[in-house]
Length: 451
Image (cartoon, rainbow, N blue to C red; front, top):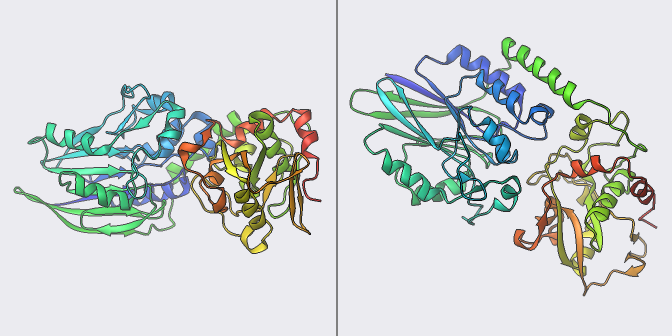
């Protein structure tokens, strides 16, 4: 007997793709077939996810009838209270808890499903190890939402030991990344099938499947007889353009609800112009918000964080669309010589036209750097002043920026380890919203940085 296991990962709230998944499964899925998602289905860049903190989005996923989904880092971004509220939906995670070590109420670590007379043990994993098997990689950010992940090796091993003799085939929904999964496989008891996510890799192997970034529908075919279960093949299906009309109708209703919640107009003192490749009023404003809120010697920001100017009417919806990146205010200390190196790169036209791809970034281009109003930049001859004094290459400066630049994305000399930085739990767009009526910051934003 043949049984198909269908699989998605890292959809990141791409509901157009999910509509095609629904249409394909409606046409091809047999009654005994299984469908799983390996996490990062949600994404706070999406207004529908923002509007009701993921509930409507997961109701749309439920139309595809998944047996279970793993908890990815984008689900964790919602925080403990929202994850608890959503846990009644088919979410699995064996290695997550609240900051005090207590479990997230209602969230299961595993489930056993029966198909074709066989029992399938399914376990979910959230990211814990970073590239190179760096332990505890993500918890600085997760803990801001009262959540943390733990080492998956003892957690999964315990589940396998406790369920010996209770299952015939084991499946791991691992939102850990392909390279980390390969290392975990050396440390864990054997699993029959890994369905991966997080690294956006496209892999179709006998015991491992990962389907990019919401690009393909994975399918693993099993042959089941009375004695055993055998993997026949693994494939990544490029979905046809056909969408599901019933799914799209429900999506339209959900989007109308989200618009009603998030489109209420917010007061704003003035509109702000924008250009990703030169000094602009919007980036100046963002930097002055950061400097006023957190202090430090200066604030700086990559222009690519915005997708356009700030125009009326302004709403939470328009701010999400304008500043879609999920990036947090970040404070740390850096030598002046590294600041100067980054600022010099910012004057390189070829450099600032790069795509800007990096963790948490949802923009389209890197852009030049903007600064708080206490910074003066001279292009020719090149010079930088802070509070009227030349930037000293030998001095350490406390800077306020975001975690994109803190990781060295786009501007490598700005990188410092996570443990040397402090992070605020808000996103940059949340801070912008708080300062929309702050006259002092708007006035500071009008001060020209480049002379």
